[in-house]
Image (cartoon, rainbow over all chains, first blue to last red; front, side):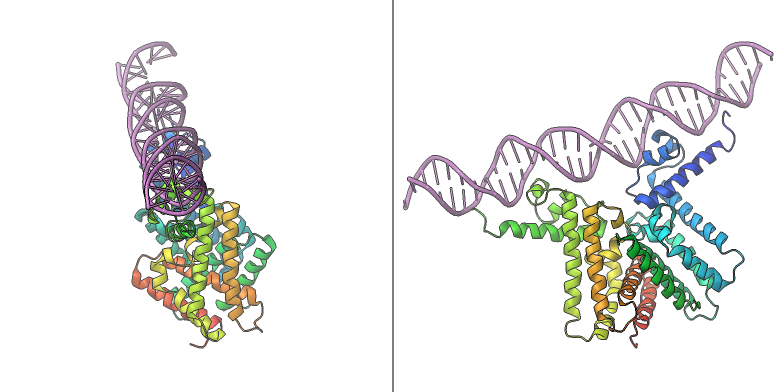
Length: 194
Length: 194
DNA sequence: TGTACATCAGTGAACGCGCGTTCACTGATGTAC
DNA sequence: TGTACATCAGTGAACGCGCGTTCACTGATGTAC
């Protein structure tokens, strides 16, 4: 073999990482195969040595994006008590930084309206990601919380909805205010003393 | 003139109404000019007698869609006291019907993630729509509510976020449960006794 | 050690297709005389 | 009243472009002898 054993797998990972950013930045329909390949330092023709079609790339990109978020939040909340972890999560998620950085952010905040219109495999990947995010939040809520799972879903909906809405507000200061107020409200709802 | 004075304006309205549905159903990038014109009973060539380009159609479609929602909710809450109107609004918005019917629903629930990526005129039309929706909710909140406007924005974010999230859940019953639980929580937050 | 061959990730031209947009034309009806 | 002309909303062929996908080819390197 003229390349190392891991060479192809490394290339694939590079492509998936580029796709994970591009899909969040432009949506599944706004990204082109050629653009993602160029971002990974390759030409478009080689794409089909790694993926059967563009859909498959979008599926992998979504898994990568949800995985990145999960790992990042796991790192940031490592060793924290549940209530503290929840507060950390909210303080990282509902922020001007997240608003300004969809390509590195949560797919729910960045793609929620268009993903339900995608083909089945893409929708399934998205649903898996949403469920794992909701489950993570649910695990941080006190065990005796009534309707723990549905409260977690409700919190995800509010956080993602708030970030998405803040992107509709063109004024940065106004958006920042909205996000700050929402952070306070969400933490109150979760029973976290400010 | 071989057509009535109002003929052209009526045609334009037909096109805009078709576009308002199509844009919500498929997103601004998912709709084609030819498709909207066909929906209005015309061929694509005539489009440019009514609009300078596709962007302008999307702007009009958004205004129409927000207008439809506003009129519909005004009708349903006509004569109700503020608290009652708020409850009516939530009970119409956070529902399986809204989840199943994006083409006739709220643009915030259906387009929130992709509209911030559109060109300036489209974003501006969207922002105007969002602001008028938030203002309507704010007016229904008690006058002495702290941060009335930002609470209203927060409520819109949660309602739209919840409907968007429910569209990611493929199981109808599970989605309906999530929506019902969210309705309860939102009304509680707004201070409406159940 | 040196040479011929095999491998295969990646290249880039080419394809068919759908899209937004343009434009010469149509044809129903009103107006001028 | 009848006929020639003007109007203009709408038609449909054609355009250039970008996209997803295909495929014959390249060229660096490992293997066989």
